[in-house]
Image (cartoon, helix red, strand yellow):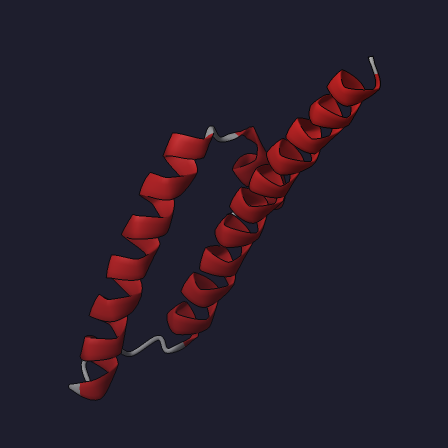
Length: 78
């Protein structure tokens, strides 16, 4: 998954995608433990995608908090 694709998603879509990636990671780990997973690089890709999704979601949350603080400071000055 490309970073520009992730940035275009809405917050709700990001949360849904994070849940899907977590479930897929669990399934891949089970398959790996049972020696059914032939392409183990999928584990790494899923982990990286999950990290990207979480990073973008956290950045958006921090931006909202910063905007709210800025509005509060401007309101106090006025």
